[in-house]
Length: 503
Image (cartoon, one colour):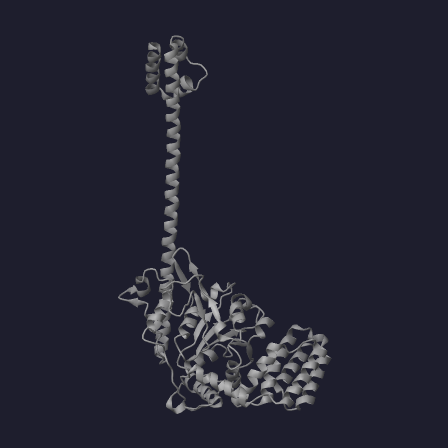
């Protein structure tokens, strides 16, 4: 056994003196000088010690390798965690920059509103106090912009009452007053027919589309309406990249643990605290496909029960969420109207029948002529009062059976010659629009003329009118036969325009 200890001493000297040689020749080599010299004299005990020490050395080597692997994993994990932390910090920085840009934009808008004599948007200004953002001081708040709205109305909802000089005002008087207000205060000129069509559209549904060439006053009309109502219209600019509802309502950010809110969501939520009318403008709404980002609202507004007009904002609610957000859901109030503007050019998408059938469309084909009007004050108008006027109009002016029968004959003629029909939605809109238009000061046949042009003749544009020239002439004659030569003038102009296009 003493020979083994002499061998072990030689091995240790080799270990500390030349480690690479030890592993290459004395431990892993198939043969080596030291083992040959000492091995024959080990004896049984020496060989036992040799095996034990060899096992110990292998265990130490394996332990060193495992330790190195463990340290490498720790370093990699630390690096990954550091990258995630940097990413979180970068996202937070971008969110703060976006908030600053939004605040700066709102400040500019408020300066403009002050210059025009309109109350400033307090909800936009409440975000700053002593150089710090109030919403950032609320730890864990998922909806900072909606929380600001809650703070604005913490003392109660905003209640609008009719002025003393407007008690018992009628729809006709409201139309005339709005037209005079637009002329005298905004230098915007609209024909009385356009004003009647707009207010009648509000009595028909919640979605109104204003189409036409640029510069004809599409965006100015709802903006002026907001000024007229002393509430201000919320403008949401549609982007070509919009693909789904998250572009409209916002989305929950898993990194920041906050909901990225949009101006659209803020405006809809604020409307739940008010009893006056909210006008929400979707500017250039056909820059993206409407049925993609607005599909949920198109479906909701089809429901006859207003209590079912509910939008899922977030999957699960919390106790500290905004007060009118119940279990992550928001009830769309009935005091809000969506007004979309649309240009018809190569940069936009075609508005599909799915959207047209659910909306009332107004077409701006040229500018209105300037006129003089007396100075007219704005009219804060409770939404309930306006809705009651619409309900009373539908009771007071039902469609005459004679006109309805003639319109059904016109429907049969269009089906026979053009394979188009008045769907159930269009018939429902007719029964809503016509009485409101009469109450606004128009006539029954003028209302039918407007709807026939915008709902039926609009669809002719996608047909091959070159092969329908004779049928279009017959349609013109049919209108004369049913309603007389001096009626349906807008539809006749549209038919002549289609005939001219076919040449």
